[in-house]
Image (cartoon, rainbow, N blue to C red; front, side, top):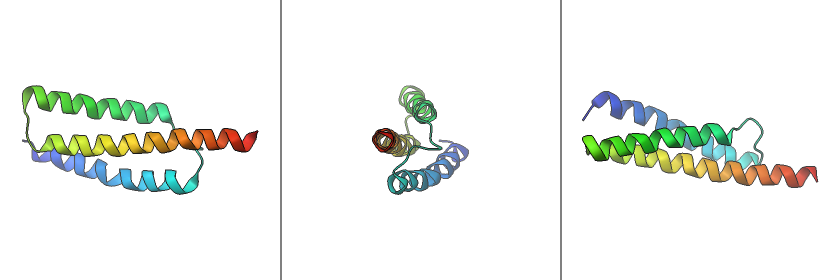
Length: 89
């Protein structure tokens, strides 16, 4: 287990609730990139796969928690894209 890896994931993870909140209340996708979020999610999935195959420990849970938060932000961003399209119609 790497303490530095855990600290990195905790720091990154602390930003996702703010992003999720902003996505939920703004009800717009302006300024958000679903592609970026999918790339970040792919990174967390790669981290989980590495941990499962080479070094399974509790830090794997941090990858999973962060991945779930990114997934929530993706869902909200896609909802907001639909809301933006409806408001333009």
